[in-house]
Image 1 (cartoon, rainbow, N blue to C red):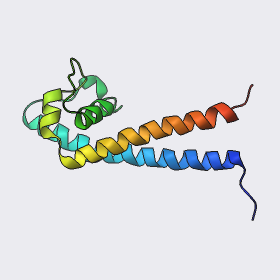
Image 2 (image 1 turned 30 degrees about the vertical axis):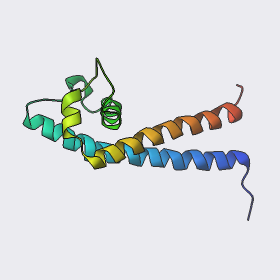
Image 3 (image 1 turned 180 degrees about the horizontal axis):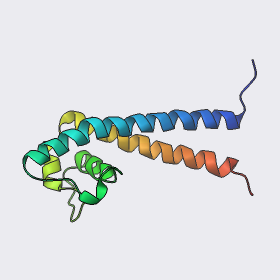
Image 4 (image 1 turned 90 degrees about the vertical axis):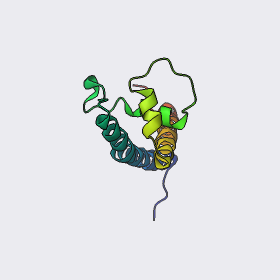
Length: 119
């Protein structure tokens, strides 16, 4: 059995964190965002029209759910409705997606800078 090089280990680590991040975004979008937007639609509050399909509102939902008491003056989503309709599981999923996002950026930087070619 051949030994893996440091570069191979970094590639494996990046792939694992990429998969974790993908699962986190998928679960957060399918469970939390879908629930919150369904409840908002019952009150006549619709998601931003410009964000259909790209998911740019997901980080806004996650930060509002994780830190509901932070004073915000502007957001891409309705802050009060998001706080009102979020559940305990939404908080856990928001933490999972935020932490996995930070980890993927850190690992990506660690993999890129030492191992990127100079050309």
